[in-house]
Each structure stands twice: as structure tokens, then as C-alpha cells.
Amino acid sequence: EIVLTQSPGTLSLSPGDRATLSCRASQTVTNTYLAWYQQKPGQAPRLLIYGASSRATGIPDRFSGSGSGTDFTLTISRLQPEDFAVYYCQHYGTSPPMYTFGQGAKLEIK
Amino acid sequence: EVQLVQSGAEVKKPGESLKISCKGSGFIFATYWIGWVRQMPGKGLEWMGLIYPGDSGTRYSPSFQGQVTISADKSITTAYLQWNTLKASDTAMYYCVRQNSYDHDLDYWGQGTLVTVSS
Image (cartoon, rainbow over all chains, first blue to last red; front, side):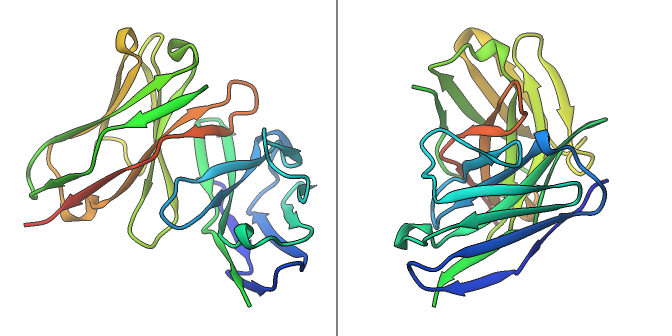
């Protein structure tokens, strides 16, 4: 079973800063099946990045995803006030079909 | 517009049964895998399982196999999550999700159904 470990657990930054969130897999995973989600308080999560680096519909270009193998990164280039939230990475495994989420990373205002 | 609209919040007692629903619209419901994700209070996301409404095929997380039942009625484009015997530890927010057919990400989420189990 693949385990996803996100770091840091909490990141304190100011609007306008650059945020870098990490997701490390316990074994090599397929980029196609690596996604990132954003969850704001009291809301359902929403898809940000799929296939490790493709932005979902309507997601601003300040959000970008990168990485391969076991190490993946979500970067937010210029933080806006609405970007402070919890972020989850997620992997889909095919044999057997299985979704695994990272434990989440909180991006808070400094 | 793709939408997943879930049933309202529930308050139940331990030992009771419960079935919550998720109605899809704006897409061909029978041709997408629909799943459920649990979020316990203050915690992260846990995938529970999936159903393909076209043939009612299911996939469960080992953590939830035998604990819940996922079903669907494609004629009314609705998926369900059911418990026969609720426990206090089932208290959580439950989200239904649509699986993207190509990349298998969870591209649409319902608004969530809060289930509270308390004596």
C-alpha cells in the first residue's frame, strides 16, 4: 500500500509570497494518477491539479504542480488571501483500485 | 453543469441504520464511477469506495469493506452510502465524488453530508 507524506504540516506565509508544498510517496507512482486538492474551512475539497502537473478547469495559473517518481510539489507562485487553506495530495492505484490521500498540509497566514 | 447534490445532515443513535444519498446531474451518470470519501472531525480525507452505476460494480477500500454498503440507482441518477449498525466512530462528514474517466482524479465533489452518531 502506498503512503503519501506531505510536508510541511503547516506553512505560515504572507500574501504575495511563494508557497511550496511537498508530497512524497512510499514507492514510485505514476504521474498520471497524482492529484492535488484544496479545502477551505466548511467547504468540500476541490480539484486543483491532476496528472501531477495539469491544472483543473478554472484553476488560476499561479497554481502549478511538478514532480515524478516519489517526489511531487505543489507551488503557488503569489499567494492570494483566498489561497490560505488545507491542501491534499492523492494517488490512485490500479491494482487493486485504491485512492490514497496525504495527511494534508495547512497553509496559514503569517 | 455537473452537480452532485447530497442529502441533508443526519443525527442518529448508535445501533441505528442509515442511508445517505448523492444525486448527480449534468453528466451521463451511468458511465462514471461515483465514490464516497470520509472526513472525520478535524481530520483528513479517507477514500471509502466506488460504484459504477451502469452495472452496479463496486470497489471498496479494505478499511471500509464490510462496514458500509455503496449502491446506486441509475434510473434516478443517485448513489447511496448505507450503514446497518452505526457507531459513534462513524461521526464524520461524508462526500460523494465523481471519478474522472481518464486520469482517475476526483473531479467533482458533493457538498457533503454530516452524520452525527450520539446516544
